[in-house]
Image 1 (cartoon, rainbow, N blue to C red):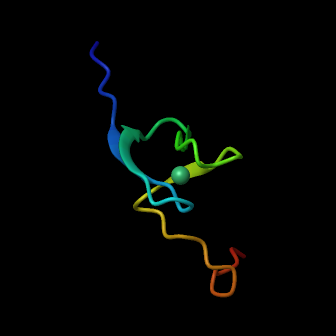
Image 2 (tube, rainbow, N blue to C red):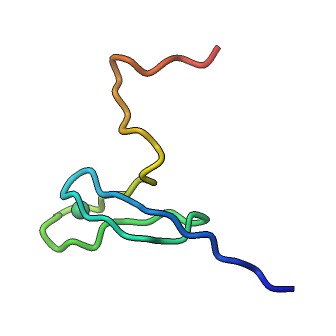
Length: 57
Ligand SMILES: [Zn+2]
């Protein structure tokens, strides 16, 4: 059985890097200007805005 690797656009909020990567995995920005690991978010996921984020209840 052939497994399709679903890919989607991931964005680094820190430097703006964009890459198409497997949506099944988590990805960290490889930009060497970061001195810490920055996780990239899928572009379909809105950047979290703490003031407006609705609480699930
Ligand atoms: Zn970055």
